[in-house]
Image (cartoon, rainbow, N blue to C red):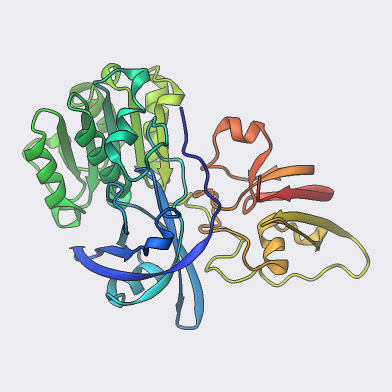
Length: 386
């Protein structure tokens, strides 16, 4: 499976051109990309951008999936309000056209099997990438809540590019009022009546067919896969939502013999707390041990080398330590989900706690998520430029 070529993570200030209400608790935010930056903001359907803003005197970063097919001069993301979420609450309540915030260039590998050639030409992008599954690929997505965001981009690009392609979505929400992109999903059904289908599962509303009511658990998932989606006819799977749902579907597909390289997944979060930088501040306060019981963490970034001493007792991550020396070290979620802080270990021993972003071949080549990686020896050297 071919992942998009990784672009170097870099923030640029972009102006909000439109804020569109999707539901009572979700908005679509459009950013204007100036001509001189358009090449930097080319993207593949399914990728995300990290946003950085100063909110009440605090720097806050969050990652959001791009929800539209590639179009020159614009980036669109959807932001759903999270309970207690600083950034999502601010975006839903305060963000307006004309606001300028920092937007990282597109990142991520939650993409289909495409060969990256013409990033803002969806037809060339998708049509050239499906040679290995024929001209009529069938893709299935299982998403919950704002997990529909990258699916919208992928589905629109595929359906508009390949006349024989088909796309099916199982979309879980609490109720009908929580369905993001309801109008756009309806438009896709009208435009591609024989090639696109969306099956809404509402956990807190009764529907005519009980299969589409209630939470998706083991039993309901099995019924959906048996009666709604045929696993044997699916060329690629896309899973996006909370950890529990994504893992449930991955396990079920594995038990049904679906090959792992046919399943792409992206998480909102791992559901576990992180001791790393939560809101985008520099690394939490740590000072070197005056008695010398330290680990030397060295890194290369933008062609420049740096190092910092980290006390063994702190057991801190590479990212947290590196941020004390270079506040511009790239990261977004600090939870092992997005992959923005990816780097290659050049020398040293380490342990990576979580990984929901790197492919197996990347890990085998020594790449790590620095927000989840801690040195286990006396020194370690990583290369963010690799």
